[in-house]
Each structure stands twice: as C-alpha cells, then as structure tokens.
Image 1: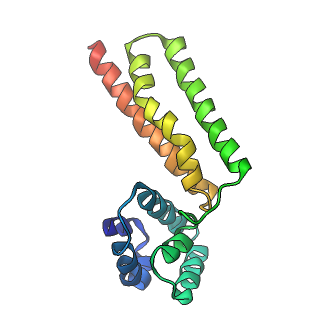
Image 2 (image 1 turned 90 degrees about the horizontal axis):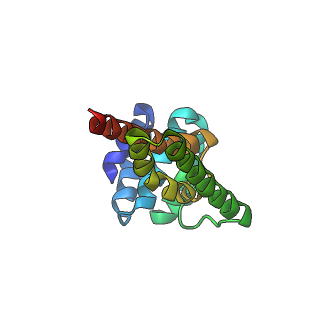
Length: 165
C-alpha cells in the first residue's frame, strides 16, 4: 500500500514520507485504507497547509498505527456515521441508480446498455464511497466518486462502440 504515497505532493513526501510509510506498511491491507489514502492525497494537493497541520497533529499524538492513519486521512473505521450521512449515502445510491436506468431506457441501444451495465458497480459503491470519504474535502469526495463514474462510463462507451462495429 505504500506505493499510494507516491500520489502525495513531492514536498509532503520529502518531509513526512518515511514516517507515514512506516505507519501505512504496518496497517492491514484493505479497500478502506486505499480509499483513505487516495482521499488524503487529493486533500494534500488541494489544501497542503491544512493537510500538513492534520498530519503534524497526528504525529505529535504518538498513538501511531490505525489511530494515526485515521487522523491523517480524516476518516476511517473510527469515524462514526450519523443518520444524515446514512440517508445521504442511500439517496446517492438510489439517485445514481435512477440516472443509470434512465440512460438505459432513453438510449435503448447497445452503447447505452453497455454503459448502464458497466456503471452498475459504481451505483452500488457510491453510497459506501461517500461514507468512507467523510472528513475529506468535498472536492476530494467528488473527485473520487465522480472519477469512478467517469472511468466506468468510458469503459461502457468503448465496449458499446466495439459491439456496434
């Protein structure tokens, strides 16, 4: 998982890289850790000063391990989910499912069917992604969730175009 630290800004890696690499290497590999590190990298690029303060606070606490990763990334297993978060995650999932269904119904050809089928994993993951990215900036949330949909859309589009040829 330490390879994900290459996504952080060069100055940040120079200053904090060895310390956080040690902490990340000691963590169990999980999808949540990947999401947390990706969100942290986006935040580190968008708000370097605020992110550096968050890291220094976590490092000064000396608790290490998953507590440090949780504070560093702004979320993780210790973040509690409010009813509002759960409802918003559910609304995102339902809303994205309706959008994908509308694409499939309106288009009703091999391209739109391929797009709809390939975007299904994104529909299923959007609520979960939202919950895991709490604590990160809105831009980091939009970049990861939107990025997932863009990649899936492009895969579906290419697959649909390949079928029509």
